Length: 210
Image 1: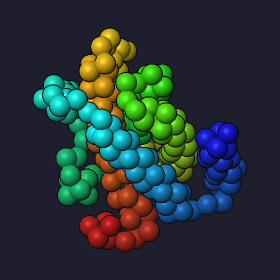
Image 2: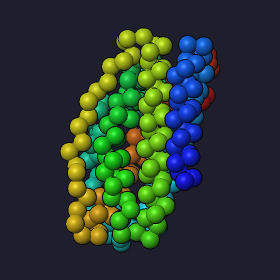
Image 3: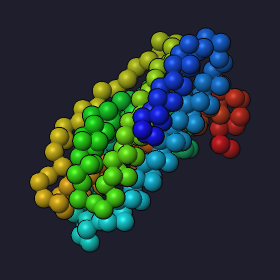
């Protein structure tokens, strides 16, 4: 019930944002998007810590490299210094492309979490559903943003996700689940960083100080 209430509040917040978007300035919209992306990254970090608490000894060795994340094909700034040299339209496009690329993987994680061989699978499952709620909320907010920014900011790169199975044995499921979550944490950090740069630009702050 608490989780449903949380999701309802998120969607109501998005609805209010849609209704009043014409009266809200770009800087305020950027601030709201930045707050949601910050929460998304915080949740993903918390989930990774939960998974670390019960990880197979050989898990670190067997887990795929970060370059194997399905979003690695997207050409994005490697750090904040590079992001500062990217245009507003490209940054918002990259953030939306990354967010959209996680719709299917989050569905997979959500379906696998309840039976994950982990003592905290109940909490993990709940947090995954929260991630889905915040991802949806952030995506809706970014849609509003690009409508205010103009058509040149509306391009989205399609990033296919081919993984549909975490494996059959317990170790494989834990490792692949953890791998996907580590990829999401990495991408949520990028999304959050891009939106913070955009927020600073919208509020006329020096982005390098944000």
